[in-house]
Amino acid sequence: MSASPRTPPGRPGSGLHAALTPRHAADFAPLHGTRIVSLALNLPGPAALARLHALGAQALKIEPPAGDPMRAMCAPLYRAMHRGIARRRVDLKSEAGRDALMGELDRADLFLTSFRPSALRRLGLDPQTLAARLPRLSTVAIVGARGRAAEEPGHDLTYQASAGLIDAPRPPATLLADMCGALLAVEAALGALLQASRVGRGVALQVALADAAAFAAVPRSAGLTAPGELLAGALPGYAVYRSRDGLVALAALEPHFATALQQQAGALTGRALRAWCAARDTAALHALARRHDLPLWAWKTGTD
Image 1 (tube, rainbow, N blue to C red):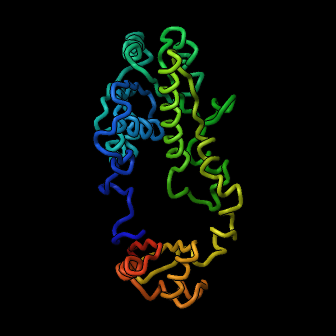
Image 2 (image 1 turned 60 degrees about the vertical axis):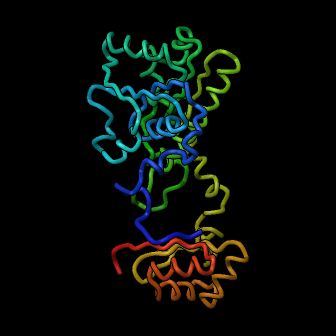
Image 3 (image 1 turned 60 degrees about the horizontal axis):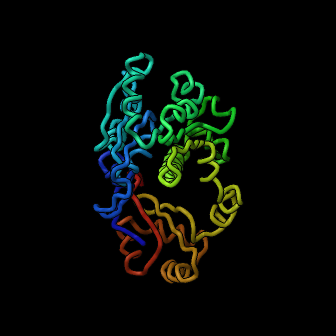
């Protein structure tokens, strides 16, 4: 319900690999014996590969001669996503490079990509060509959007915007479409491997980041988190307030939580809760949460 105050997860040095991968028992390895080859760069593909590897798959990441751009953008995240994963730099523009990749795919169960469909066709790596040459190989292609829109440029920011998730002239706090896209890619990979084992031939699936953003936006699209609605400001007990040394998120939705919060704050009005939070620091709020079973998370912001 609550935890001791600390730096929010996801910052360099705070357990990125643990946050990226499934936290199951060490001997839970349903993909043991499965071999995955990935060409996917940046975030969604490597994040998906990290999760599949954590489920027991043997994973090989093929990178271009210059490496994955994510290494330069965020080295801690790159390292966390590739822990325990074999990496090899290959020039796919050369015949030798393509032959090397095909040799790896010949021994693989699943091929993960994040190229545009036209780029895969130019390299002879589109699902149709691969199905003819390697019929038992399954493929999961991460694209921006489905159909003809798969050839259009875009990134997490544009997919979040298209899903109605951006309300202010600033980038969002996280790459929601990319991270949800990684989970959808894992789902597709597991489904493809399961069906391939049953029917004896590979499955070709496509995962669109625009679909991932739309999935993340379902509560907003349904009105649940639209401005002024229940979970977007209409309920004082479900909101973010300033504390003495930072911020505090309250989530007293259920009646018993609302009652417990009211007993501590005196009232469940925005005015009462703002004053209650402002009078306490992070440590005091967490102590109250533990003592009275309050659903809250408080954290320091470095400013008063």
